[in-house]
Length: 168
Image (cartoon, rainbow, N blue to C red):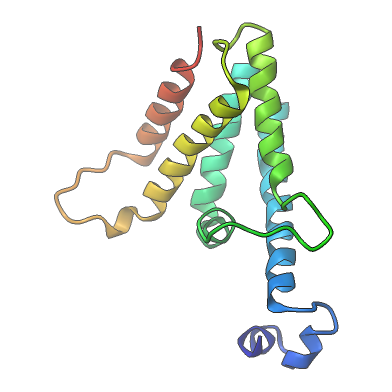
């Protein structure tokens, strides 16, 4: 907490006027970042006509957020599971995942996606885009000789492959 206080220009005890613990501060920070993340991907959803086009836009917006905000992304998606605040059942960020599940369900209902378990398909799609974000965030750490394609070409291939795998 002292390091945090020093970075924001206050004393450590002053932080406790706003947050009961380091965990509360972390959860509040994650909540704010999830709001930013959700807002950035929701814009992509609104701009497309078909549900599959919306899913593609969602995947691309998700990847873009991760690449453009790697430190935020790591905290939100790669630092271990969050624990809901006491007295609350939902985690920050769950709304965004529920939007993905709803889009998958709607696409299945419209015949745009093959029938299946919408939650499993949503997790599969999330796994694919999460994987490519993690790969691209660490691309500079790959050993010499490991060929990494152009970022845009890789994103196109991953998104196309993921969606073609679940369309009828």
